[in-house]
Length: 292
Image (cartoon, rainbow, N blue to C red; front, side, top):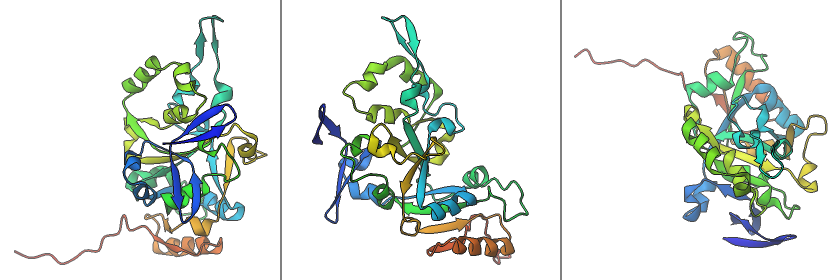
């Protein structure tokens, strides 16, 4: 554990990663290995499937976009800060909307790929149209590369802003029990934001196949607020070098051979120089079997 000076006292920092003489300061949550082998965490491969139009935007805008959890589909996302706080002294319910609006996130997965992910995140609204903007590609990187961008060396409070955590999958009853047991003061005590970050790393068991790892940002200071999109405040932009970040691109395994060649050419045309190929998830080559 490391303690750093702050304006209002000493604040706890969960993890400091020292690599190649550079100090990476950020907070890791829900990684059991953190006490034993931090390098093992950083060497984890992670991936995500995103619409091709967003992939193109990564290269044209050179940014990774985190969004407010209220934009996510699951109504249980950010469940804690959706609830009002009942004040006995004021005898009223107080909205946490302002606090909730400070959080941004992006989901990645420890799983390389599976059928459900392709069907959910590569919609293929028009199966025969390779220009369908919702057609997905899978990008792969490492935790080490990802966290190197998910920080700000110029922000002295970065460990209270930038988090990377593994999602825990819980029953609805367990989530409701958490709501009943933990008051707002329990989570807010000490002025740290890691307890609120933990609530964004809880999902229902129905989603456990995703094996998510999430980037989270608690945007409260002037420095990090500069990364909020000036047109759409639901977006938070991390500056990146896409070619340095992405290790591999896979195109949808359901595409025909002609469609695959076209998609690979489009990926190249946007400027990606790394490995790009079709997913082999549905590839099967018949082989001779014994007669007896």
